[in-house]
Image (tube, rainbow, N blue to C red; front, side, top):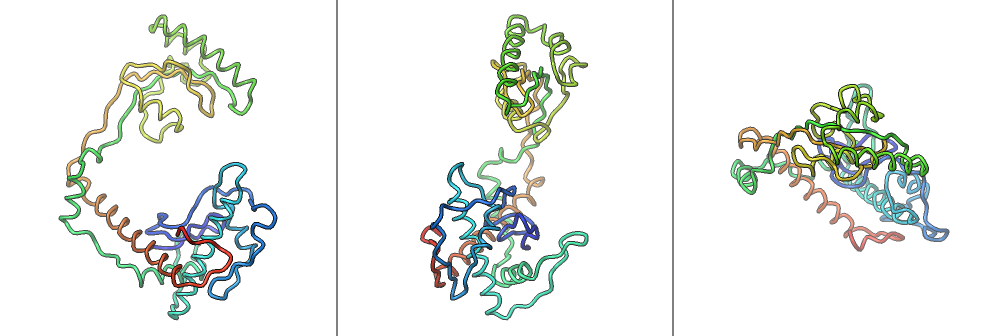
Length: 298
């Protein structure tokens, strides 16, 4: 259990290196609400939260386009909760040395304080053997080996952000698709002649792919195809338009209980810890005097 040490993508609370509470995402451009939306100072038990602190935190929170106030709100709540945790750690006179979390990388003092507070507060109880088995028995099919897809494709490359190039690639892909639909045996020869992917040298064959081996848009299509099936329309990814054929499918096999017991135990332990951590934060919020920030939904 630790607090994230990334200075520009800070997760409020983590458990064994994984996010539990707070928001972490790819850094976003600084986003502020309209003038006046953050004019009132924020006070947490008499401690003033500077707008600059919130502004820095905002880059770690996403928001719908045109609604930067939502990112500002998320950042405000994250900063306030962090302040509450640090206040409580100091009230309890907690002291600890920053831990090394990687080669030459150490926690900040604040991160070390929060980690130590949560270690002393949250019960790290292990799930019982009965609880683990009952969780598995709910649906054993949840625990499978990853599927394997044997795939071929034809790529009409284009930058999706370039409207003209995208339109030309789509027109070309539709023409190729029409030929393959009329005669499926021409797929390999068309791939060798028309594809913009290096796989053209093998008739478009990509070999065996597993989860995470390709871009999400491509993988989503693979999960929807049956063995031997081809996409009925071109599929757009960041690389351009694809005509995809699923040549063979090796579905994931259900794993025996003994093979997944440790994984289930870890998941149950993490879930229980997260529930306690969120409850603890909620209690700190309820007991605090907070001005300038809305925590009614927390």
